[in-house]
Image (cartoon, rainbow, N blue to C red; front, top):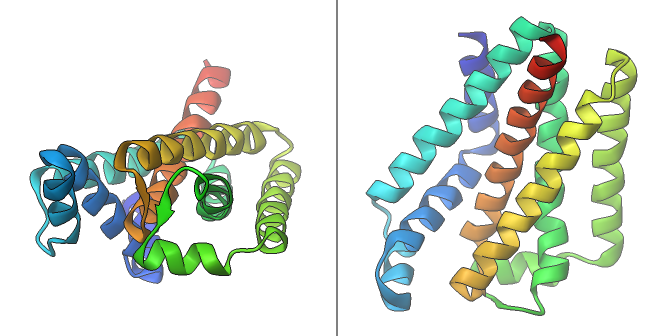
Length: 198
């Protein structure tokens, strides 16, 4: 229950904007053709692809936090959650600096890309690194750093794959990259802690 409430709190604070982007991107991926994909992305109603993706991602996040709390401690779960939040917010910043060469930023993605400088990207990455290092220091374990590495690299790789597949860099795709990085970080942390514990 605590894990579910923690995820619900993050959803409420963020206004669920990244989850909306994830659902819209998933709906676009299962639509037929580029025009159908764009219609599905812009449709305010959630489709089957978006609904299934949200259930899988939110369920994985809550399950990972619960496993961390059981296998390590509630403190470890909380620190992993904070680290995942920091890393996942750095991924779209890096993505727009790298992916704008491969796809045209449009809509909110274009607005974000135009305002994201190299200095801003460096500050965001440094902030995420400080969060992870502080978490590792408090826990006395490099688990948080390893999990953040998996989440960051995995989220960036998936984000680049989405850019290539969709041929554009939109706000929904950036939101999807946040959620994918977040869930990958938590799943990696739970897997590492579970593997060490056994």
